[in-house]
Length: 387
Picture 1 (cartoon, rainbow, N blue to C red):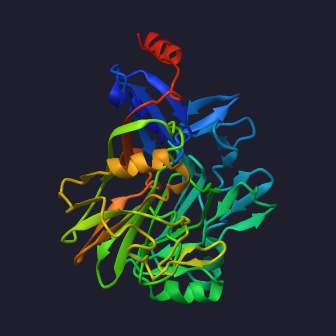
Picture 2 (picture 1 turned 90 degrees about the vertical axis):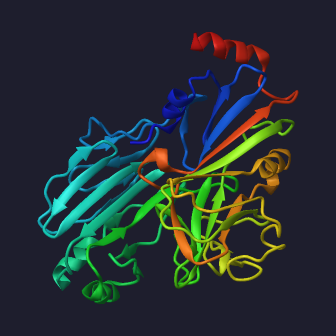
């Protein structure tokens, strides 16, 4: 379950100075503040106070399960509600689900369904172990009623087989045909999440294979393996005052597997959406990259901010202090980074949608607040609370 902000407090052991939707700031006691940023929301606002998000499911009076930070509700019978909207996959011979931390697990005739509570919405994964019959296939797609609240964005329904082949659902006939020739097990993944704002934390990857929306994928893939992959990554630094001086900033990516010969971080110069693909950086109102996959000097800086190779330890870090200072001083120009490999092989890093919050991308920024920074009385109060 996700309780990222609380885990950061335990790891640092420092007094909390400030909380924001995507970050938590700590007093180092020497005039410096260290802020850790997550791509996924880590706090929710209640009566003007930011509180840590915990996605552990709690039983509600109506028999559904939910969390204080969200209006999404999940039932053991597979129903999912958000406002007046409801969806349910009927499945074949489905058993009553079992609550497991931040998810409900439902077994059915030829697979398992996982219904996850997320920091910003809901995630469903249906894993099937064999091709369905025509009669069974229709029950894999959720039926819907009501209107999804406008604050949420529905992701495409995709299916991925054991060999990594992807199918984007268009109609039941094409879906059944694809399933008949797929390598099993197959994972089907429809979900919805809060509409991101222009500077909110987000990440994805784009590749030359197709124009699929990978925004909800649990991986950021970088490298070359039959086709090119590039990673996109952005953190919301708006909680750092623009007059601040950044002394250090480090990006940490985890769970990397395999390796290209080398790769580089470049600062992006244009806006993009998490649904971006190889052709379009913005898909809601199609806007193409200057060249497919992004163009050096136009879509991103020609000079890399940081370069390196995968260390093989499942934890890679890059110094992007210059980028962080630029974004703090020029917040409207924070478009994040693009990660580009310079050789063959690929690395699959964990994304902000990974179910294990400790594996997600982390940006740590150490800064000294300017005159518009954190009030001294608040720092004093934070120290008192920590004692």
